Every structure is written in structure tokens, then in C-alpha cells.
Amino acid sequence: MVDHGPRTGDKVALTFDADMTDSMRHQLRSGAVRSYANLAIVDLLEREGVPATFFLTGKWVEEYPDVTRRLAANPRFELANHTYGHLAFTADCYHLPTVPRQRMTADVARTFDVIAPYGGRQTRYFRFPGLCHDRAALTELAPLGVTVVDGDVVSGDPFARSWRPIVDAVLSRVRPGSVVVLHVTEANAPMTDEALPHILAGLADRGLTPASLSEVLAATPPGPAG
Image 1 (cartoon, rainbow, N blue to C red):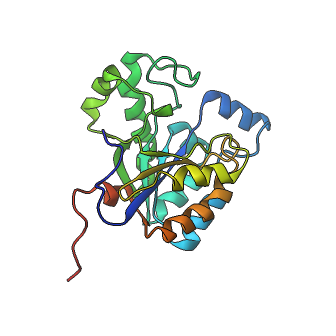
Image 2 (cartoon, helix red, strand yellow):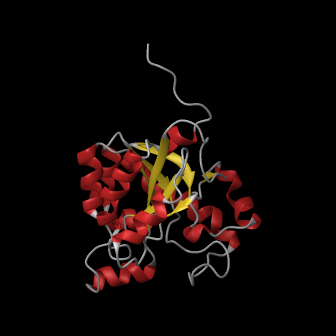
């Protein structure tokens, strides 16, 4: 279980959660919301050549196979696991319904199976919904060989009404080795795409460079080529 990488060098990881609950799926299919896939974020990352890691729920992948295919096709993007249906793995986790302990391992394994056919840079990184976990949840996931990634910079972008607090939350906490938690679920995090250019500019001003989560979590920075 990790929150961040080594505090040396200049690398930080931008991670984007792709949540999808049964309630969200119902809202999407009924037309109550337009989208839970913020393509403006993907467009910007692609245009600027910015590495990122996407923590995908299985149900989000099922709703957005074309977007998942696009993410997998980008060599700068990594794919990680965020459960199948964004159920909580502890009680009292942001009012999320909970997954029974006996189903925890199968839930996460199923998500790996859903993501697997898309190829790309798939990882064994895993993030709990709401970052809520306890010893029992960690014990249940141990057989899967996952690395649990929380993150030391929580942006607070879900339901934010302005991009400024998101930017302030990130830039006030970010350090070398940081793992920044953002969301790509447009309807639930509608200001993230507006915040992202300011975050990237602020990182550059601080001499920090976005990198893949794998690179940021590496024990030592890569040596010179040749």
C-alpha cells in the first residue's frame, strides 16, 4: 500500500478515477446526465503528451468501451483497477453501498478480467472507492498481488463548483513523488477539465513533471540512456 513515491527528483503522477455505480449507470441510461467520460481531459493529455494513470471501474469500461480502447492505445497512459461497481470495502464510506467481504476478491478480479482485453499498459495497481479500506479488505485482496494506491494529494474535484479550489488543493500539497487523485467522470466532476491546464502550468512553475505512476513509484529514477 502506497501514498506516494520517493521524494526525490521532479516526477509526480496524475491519476484519474473512472467511477461507475449502479445509480450512475441508471442516470446515464435514463438521460438524467450526459456523460461520465470527460473527453476534454483525454484530449488535453493527448495534445500535450502528458502521462497519466486511469483507475477504471469495470462498469465504466462496459459503458465506455471506445474510450477505454482510446486510453489503452496511448503509450503514455497506464490502466489500473478501481473495483467493478464502485462499492465500498468498509462501512460508512461516503454513503456508498458496501460489498460483502466474501465477494471482495472476486469483485477486483472481475475488473481485471474486464480490462484485460483492451491491452495497453495494464498494471496491478488498485484504488479503493473513497480511499476507504481496513485490514480486512487488505487481507481479502492479498491473493491478487495488487499494489493499493491511495495518493497524497486529493484534489476534491467531485462536485466542485469552480476549478480554482481544485487547483489550489493540488498545488498547495504537491511535492516530488506525489500521487494526485483526480476524476474523469464528467457529470460528477464537471470542473476537472477546466482545472487541469492550470494544474499543469502550476506543476511546470514548480519544476515538477507528470510521469506514469509506475515511474513515480519506482525506487530509483531511471538512469541515463546509452
